[in-house]
Image (cartoon, rainbow, N blue to C red; front, side):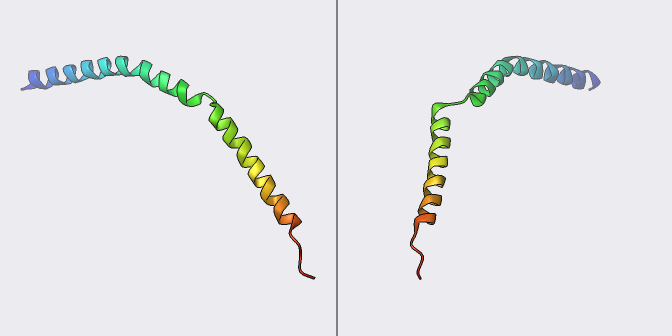
Length: 66
């Protein structure tokens, strides 16, 4: 019984090592993709700033009741 447990533990360690070796490069590639600045992110940020500015200018330009 102890031999079977040792074999199971050794097999589990081998599987974990093999999976880590295969998944490691995929994780690195996914991280590089996520860290990249995309044009849509840039345009979205600029649009957000223009939208806030437009809202503030509209709010300032409203006629106040006298």
